[in-house]
Image (cartoon, rainbow, N blue to C red):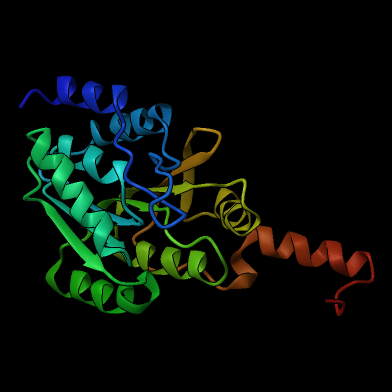
Length: 224
């Protein structure tokens, strides 16, 4: 398979994998061709045999497969979505043997998956957070993605226009554990710069300390 050719074919004709109204209408999801290109540019920097974790699934999953990930651990509660992904892969002659679909809500399975990844040493090189966008799901996904992500690995967070997600990226953008390396407007990609599997407590988080100080100065420390 010519990876570049297959990737361009995907971008030129994104499959309509998603429905939000029980099948009345279909769409290709929120990862547009420019965002998928941004993913591919990062994946090209990774060594052969790289591993991927994603919360949520769709055309990103197909992109990871085309870019020859060794393992694509994809978590979404919709079994039908994975069936559609596999059908498209078959129709387009995309090798889907690396796909490891997990039909579940991410917060239900990530704790055990993270534990297994650490015990086997099968940490991931790239993690995409694009599943549930409410609180606490976004932060649950991040906590376990950080545990599973290698030092020097990449973390992509989609839909930063949503307030819950924006708070996470603001935290990371001022942290010492992650460095912003690609701003794709709707998505940001960070590089993990620590061997730690957890963020420091609030006292070591510049964004949290800054917000606390601002509320204190405004006399709003105990307001909610």
